[in-house]
Image 1 (tube, one colour):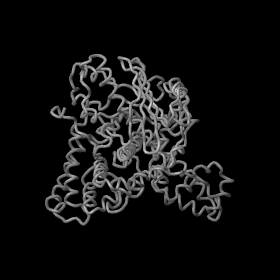
Image 2 (cartoon, rainbow, N blue to C red):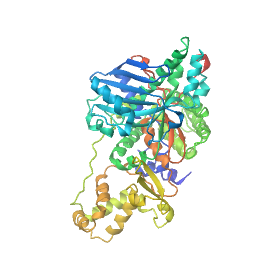
Image 3 (cartoon, rainbow, N blue to C red):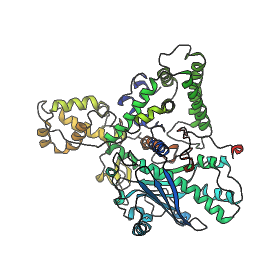
Image 4 (cartoon, rainbow, N blue to C red):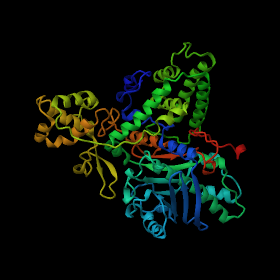
Length: 572
């Protein structure tokens, strides 16, 4: 058992920041029923949105444009797609790319001829283009080099594709960035107030990804039909299994640092939901449902196509540890005991067993499954994803109080030894090329003079060294007159009182830092799965794999689609 596991508090209590805010524990995060993609789909299904394709002007190779209308109970939106030829050598996951197979936008209406003309001109340019305040999301995607042409070939020949080949990729197209919140001049997040259809963190972005998934299905069907009028259409089971790929790099890490109150809000939502789920009675019916979730998860990780997951636990290890926990739940379902003892709170006991006998990733995976047992809990908490962030200096605060905040809330930061060169190995900066966040080796690579303020621990320590010499009864205002260079960190520390989960308890400059842990933390809140690290600095993931299809809107929706099994030939 590692140090982070030993430090974790009782499973019967809501977990503290000290329990869960290390990069390693955050990097064990997984999709839950509270993830933004899932709450968005629940809303869409509950409100029975009407989504209709109104234009599909594509040539035999799938190049052209398409439009969809999205009618919600209060508003109508439009989804616009441009598909163009892209040479294989121009296709890249990098955010600095300048050309893509597909660009798309989610917009509020109306779509006037002038608006469409502007979108045709600017949307394919992405960073070089300009949107307007009625554009909610801009994004781009590339065809999968491994799967797209294979899929068209099989459908053209009148055959469904081999599900096992599909499983190696899990998607037909992969996005490289999904932009909202004012980027390129498009709508700021403030536009989406509580009565807006896409109110809630990243729901508009997740819906746009869901729609481009639908377009990808229609795209391969169209090309196959153009090649052969007798081509078969993609089977619903295969469509349901496929998601949308995404490639994400270091840009997510500064976001976590820049929005601590928002990050606290997300983590608090999840932790309160987990705590409430663990306090449930845990009936035999619940136990049988949990056993079914174990079966599905174990099969999913046995089928996991990614052989080398680098910083993350091996899929076979996760499957094995889940099987160990499954035997505990099976005993409870049959005899009402866990390890021959009657548990007062079965899910609390199960989490304590997991903490003693399994690794961090299995523990967090178990938390996902426990929350999954109680869909009403997700409904209760799912709207708690937004906050108006305020960061203000409190000039009247005494230095005594500021010292207390530093000593109590930032104890983790004060314990780091920055005299050790390994604790200051890296620096963060933005590239001049496209303002892409990057890491450099201190003393070896250029850009150190442009270092970004991501290392909270070092700034807290620098402040604390000066605070120790200051008079306790001095005010923060008086202190800052002498030390104005510390205003930024003072404001942050004061503003995060009561936001326990706002700070990552780690050193972002350290030699041992694996940024991919922090990428996975945010991606899990989006609802990503199939984490496939390409290095310790960027990762490929899949969104909406297993999710319901557009044609299922209005049917009996069961929000129970995570960890999907590979489709069976007999079902196709």
